[in-house]
Length: 154
Image 1 (cartoon, rainbow, N blue to C red):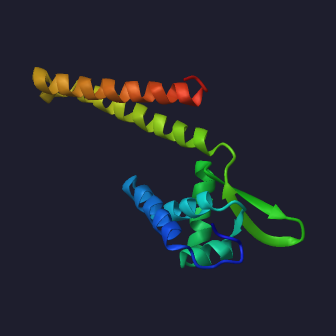
Image 2: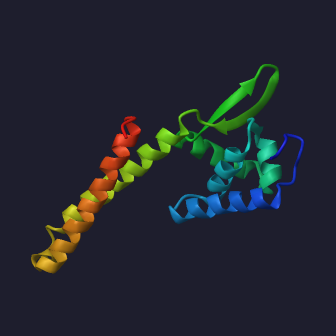
Image 3: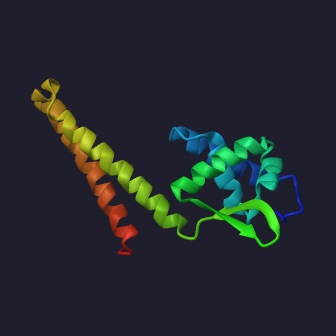
């Protein structure tokens, strides 16, 4: 894996970082946020904004903006060191619960959206109504499974 003094990512690490970035982008989040998360997932220690920018080959401003977004989402945390004015970032301690909670909330939103679709004129057709109900139930079941995971149940 990487050491803080290593600047260039190993090709396999770089591919992982890029895949996380593309995954985030597929969820309408900035690719750079996903790349930062991917990088920090592979790092045993926190990284400074300069180190992240250098490894990802992006600007410090981009790292700073995306770091604040990731921090707001609760997936990374900012840390400081006595005598050092720089900000450092690392994976948040409860990352898995945060990600599960976000995914559960999204599933619940889709479930409600689909249920609302059953009140549309098009849903008078039983095929349309049945399709919407089935999809809503599927999202509700998935949300319930994640709810159990978030609460520590199996």
